[in-house]
Length: 201
Figure 1: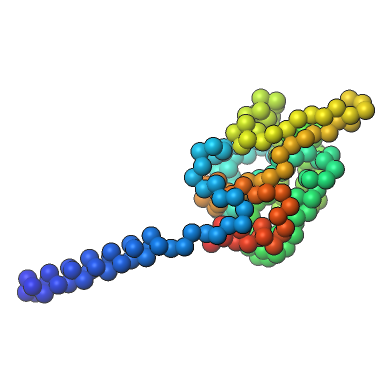
Figure 2: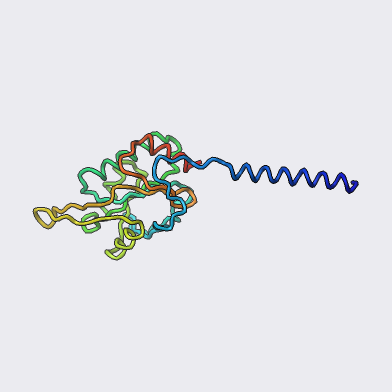
């Protein structure tokens, strides 16, 4: 092949490569309805919590799925059941894609939320939902600090009737395990489903 022809071919290949790289760089950024925290170093990147069978779970256990993580407690009168019901509706909207979503409910009240209680309460909303609990108070303090979760025991009329004030939002990780979204409370199932569809792309 003559040198001039070879140079022309190389020039074309180079030009095509530059165009493809430019197109990749210009791909549209996902348009989320909730708070995009992609790349933030302010929040936790992983966790170590116990499932109802006593097995230690970390984010790696759910690789390949979008993970929605919510903190609450089973005796919560309003926020927690509302959030779990909303997530149940999201799973219905997602249809077959719902099998690629893992909802995790992390208790901030391990004193009352035993493994058995979590095993009954959380899957009652959807059999795929999983309840997690810290192994001890130190583990609770670590995971809530890592994810900037506020919680506080509010005394009731007797020692066992207390309530727990706690952060109402949730977090979403993409299938690669990267923290992507802070989900505000009561966004509506349609809005949340759209954001999760973006993460599943």
